Image (tube, rainbow, N blue to C red):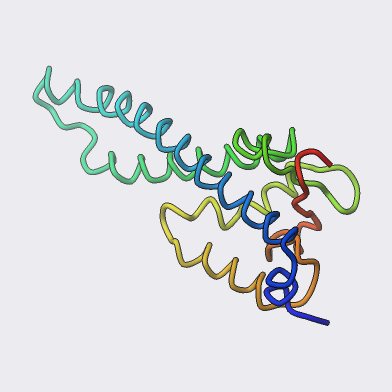
Length: 159
């Protein structure tokens, strides 16, 4: 059996299928950046008003840690809720869908397949490892590594 990379390299349809989620990922990332900027502005106001008004820093160094955890929850929630309920994020709706290969699509399957995406702001290497493992292993060429674990696949939005 051929490795995923070899199968994708030989098929323009599969190249198109891998390109669409990559484009959707970039668009989803831009959407999340806008959300982060807005929420961090609100969070900064809420945390810094007591400092400015009362000249008291009651929060210590919690702002950066809280912001990182809050951001992780938002990223993971974005992918899990949208893929678990509708099979696609905002950007993916126009390009591709995520389908379960066994049973209905669920939040659990969306959680498993979105695990590496949630860490992209924190650890880019985990996402790169996900793609590398998906490309060098044998199996369905429509799947990244977490897709094989969650038993899901990416298909064209029109299918």
